[in-house]
Length: 408
Figure 1 (cartoon, rainbow, N blue to C red):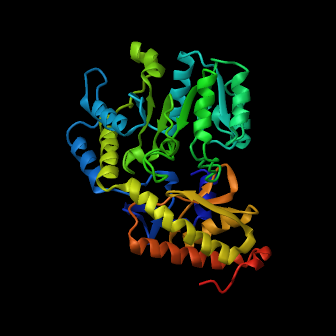
Figure 2 (figure 1 turned 90 degrees about the vertical axis):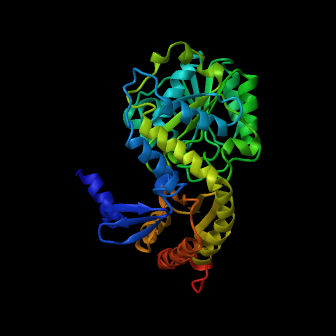
Figure 3 (figure 1 turned 135 degrees about the vertical axis):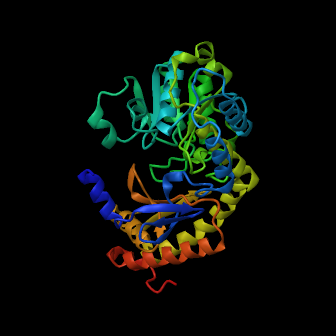
């Protein structure tokens, strides 16, 4: 084991996770943790019975395909995914990760003559070479320069800045944007932003790629982040929750026009494990579980309850050290006025039985991405653990004097 990984493991308590079910993770020592982390993967919780049923059945029949014959599972998964997608997205390419999906979209853009890339500051699209060109954080980009040429980053939420860049080269650009920035710390754009982005792309002949890897499939309390403003992109990236928390899988959905070159020559972009039957079973199971349990509505309702209560607890202990507690659905960010509390609170939460997330593109924000399968006792446990963790850490930050140390 390399030293960096050993140090990271020790930082978070040295726990070894060996089992999971629903919202809970069990370690080798028998400790149980409420999983409000996982970077958005576990919307359906771990080992959801519908997902497990689909995967188990496929495992016992045909887990990996030859790639020479026709195989029905990819078609069935694509049919289920496009049925839930925004209008016009009728073509699907399956991959294994969000970064792979981003790479596919980049190649698709090239086939349509869009060689100029526009992404957002703080955006995150992966760490493979092409995806990293889009990711808006120099910490990850600089060691691997030069990356893809012709890439510009504009401020997230600023449609006018995007319009100005697109106007410089009509018909040559491809825009990548997240409905809500996850790794930047749950950054929510102004109302109307996605619609303005779509309109700007239409005016200047740019392709719009909407990265819904973390926000899609109900995470924000709507099926897609695009739904809030009725936006349909040319290309959409899907992942994380599509796995059902069981088998890694991602997808690229596209309009017929954006996908047309791949339709003419499917061998332009292939992968040995793309559309593997076992992964397709997981995707079908995840989509079925979300629909059967109405997890999109559940995510919205849970988010509406969790956000104000977590805000009350955090501000009650930390006072003005808390800059903002924000979220949409089950993507919640707690932003501090200085970088220390986010990391300290993450460690303290783990000590109190709750797994949360740090934010790769912001050291100021602690994130919670709980599953939509939380029951009342889970929610109560989260509140109690969050309260204890905040109480334990608040005294370390003198400017927290505005908070109430008697907060219950």
